[in-house]
Length: 586
Picture 1 (cartoon, rainbow, N blue to C red):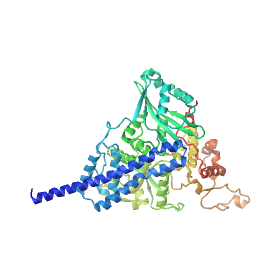
Picture 2: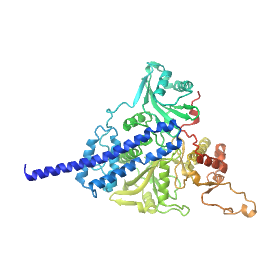
Picture 3: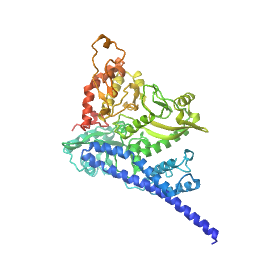
Picture 4: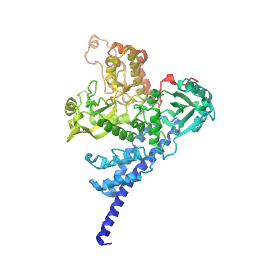
């Protein structure tokens, strides 16, 4: 071997060692993330059984930031150990190739790819965000589909009765507390199943039940999820379990309609704690039960919201390639803080923060970002839309309508730039598109108005219960989902309940006070007069009348003050993701 050949081989070996070390460093960072994420997730069972409701919310808030913290740690290690300042293209192509090899047989490979993407995108410029360097598309479609342990158990009714099977399923869930009314609750479950026509045509011996081996925990509820399998169909179901602090555990509801199950996994809900180390297999199972939920929806719902973002963006790129409609301004009244646009063929809206706000808005861009982060970390109780936050997002310029382009350049030029045929938006939020409540009501019949105004009041009450004061409660700031649920989506004025002073509006006495154009009484920052809700949000008499049927108490300061006191005293009200009519009647 010549000296030059030896030197070349030595350089190749040295390069390979660096490549492997970088790839391994990134994967080690991800391994630490999964370890800490799983540790915190596993503790959900203890918190539920010990009624540690505040600790549950604290854990949910803490876990949301785990991914970003591990990315920051990994970046620090890479910068210190490898002195990375600029992109070496051949080196990083090799790093990605090596990383793919390391992911073979990895139980969370798709999540590890997203972790790699985040690390790379923090190191290098947007022009390198393509599949040569990052996982724009997953390297291993449906990876490990047959290489993981079974994530569910199958119970054959030919081997024991339905009643005994349900009892066995509850026992295998491994709660340490008793179900004092289990016999009567199982009877109620049997009645629910017997009412399903899809099960009536089969002998019991032909039926089996599949149950996921993992209990789903969120807030004050625990959920067992499975399906009844017959020769001709499958019936998905969710068993909701709650903890009565005086009496122990009890089965609260059984959901068998896909629409009700979809709401449990809705985009306005907090993320579940579910201890499953095979998230792709879990998402595949859940999609079979709730097929109109996207993979992005389900990854987010089980706590992997960063993977939800990755999957959403992949789906979005595919949709762009398969469609030709243009982005346009979203329907509804233009906001004073955000500008909102949408793609008519895609059920999401894109929200950017304006450079300048209307004079009445005494907040900054950073204040708005902080409000959106508050919502991300908070219990959304099914009444605040989850948002996905993105940076440096590239869109095809020719897909933007001229009117939209003019609007964006007028209200937010500081965050918009052009690169060849692309428009790059520096920062935006994406959330599910809904029909603004004011537009929905304008086209609604009387029953729809009654239902929507009931939902509007319920949304406000459930936000209050979650320690959220919505701030601006005008109808335009709420949306109606395809399930008919009313959701709040304008966050720039939200605050915690203890930051507001709920007051009774003074009664005018003199003629001067009665006809005063401005408040004649002293109003301090943070003061709120609940009776004014009827004046500003409920000016339409038809809407106001429908609202007052169920929610007249929201116009009284005493209601808000009482809820404020409950929050101060640590009282956590029940807000479950299913209507009371679905609760079991043992």
